[in-house]
Image 1 (spheres, rainbow, N blue to C red):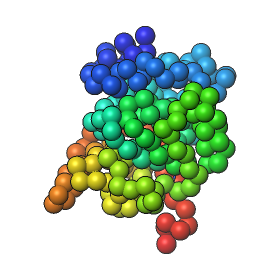
Image 2 (cartoon, protein in one colour):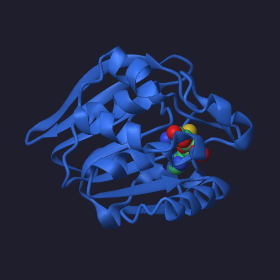
Image 3 (cartoon, rainbow, N blue to C red):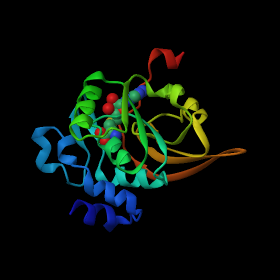
Image 4 (tube, helix red, strand yellow):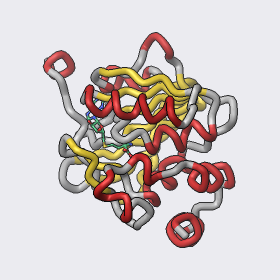
Length: 204
Ligand code: SAH
């Protein structure tokens, strides 16, 4: 139902994305009191004033990254871990960073229960990326930033793709593709995400 109406029905065609969205049990990533709404067409609260993204947006962002099986992907904003799991169904390895320890711990437990052995979750500020594991084939940021954090662009391979919501109240998804001589920027759909937190160290 969710996949038919919200994913395929709205123009998502990448078969790997459709397969991943059919496999990941979204209800397990949603707090118990919202379980009945887990497959409905909306974001839902996950505690700590954060949200699990709407299924369509997860599919849309994942498809935009044009992933292949051998890719190594960095995600900023683990949250519930749902987007992480969708990525882990498609690619070789997912590195994910979450700034709220309680959310990171919950997501890690769920990854273990669901036997996702290709996910590594770190607690920290995603603005500086994960330099030890760079470069990445793709980077996805699931919280909105006023501008694209430059360190994330640095950590992309040539040919690598980065998707991120940019803006404050009004936000737009931006797709960046790193080429040999620069970065191609493509404006995508308007969205509404929680803000990407900035720690003192990154503000300076
Ligand atoms: N993909 C997640 C979306 C969670 S909402 C899901 O579908 O469940 C965005 C998440 O980004 C929140 O969990 C929030 O705590 C986290 N976040 C915000 N600022 C961050 C930062 N600077 N570094 C890492 N994670 C951050």
